Image (cartoon, helix red, strand yellow):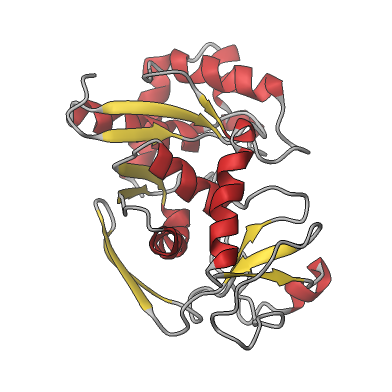
Length: 278
């Protein structure tokens, strides 16, 4: 692939084996980079120290190569970029966008106002710890979770290249969200925004379950003065019971299929067939 201005990325997390759902998303990202004669980069999202393992990193590299997906430049490793995330976080603190949250997990669980979709979405936050002063700068307090203060009632619009026009309303569809954890690590939302900007990503390809995360990340991009990117959200693959594929689906892991003698072309045909029915 030769760079024509298009830069996409693969962003697997090494907390388990890749499955057919990952294959579908990553193959789409690869194909879109090829169609646009662009560049595809690889990012290892290893910011979960309890679950991230080197054996899963090795497996994901093997599985991606086996599928025929290649990328340009060395792999970016998130755990080596903490200073970049800290710099962005401190900017949000200094500009009043971030505030400390002392809520326990139990309290947060009790704050869910309504049933949520089948996603990895975090509960809608009630604002219990939100300061009353809307623009009060904060200073870092070690061992504390921090949230991003959303603009209540603002509608976030974006056009997804696959799912069409999208509209989310702050404080209705999502609340103040976590951006910095008490263990000194960034949340997915903050790390993703910083990395996409530093890598000069022009289009993000990922699952439809992250549409709401896109709205959050657009707010972070604006608060940090970073450029917006284009988005392409793919449909999720589900098992025979209609449950979205997850890393617990060992029988549908790419590694398991390989061990059963399924070849890469057959795997991609399965992915194409399942994707076309969604």
